Length: 109
Image 1: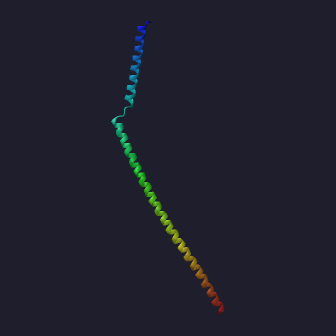
Image 2: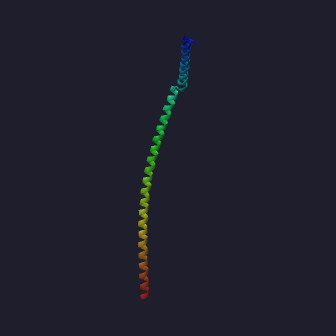
Image 3: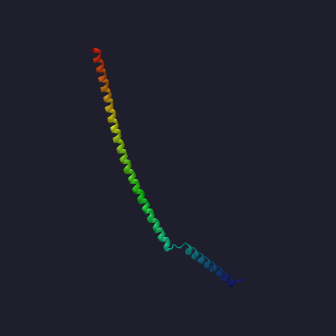
């Protein structure tokens, strides 16, 4: 093989390699292309995700408000219970004093 044939063979091999690379690149771009319908579907999914996040945020806000209301109601109920227990303790003490007074009055008679 002389020099001229070697250069032609090398050029042919490089040209074939270039053509195969270009064809492979074209195939990859052809199959990986994003169509308008795909973009529309992605937009719909993004909108649905946004709405879901808003709904989640509203639910979290509602739950926090409800928890605050329930905590407030629990505190009020506990305060009422303490007041009722104090009143009951005072009533028992007064009843015991009256019982003692009546027993002393009955013993004097």
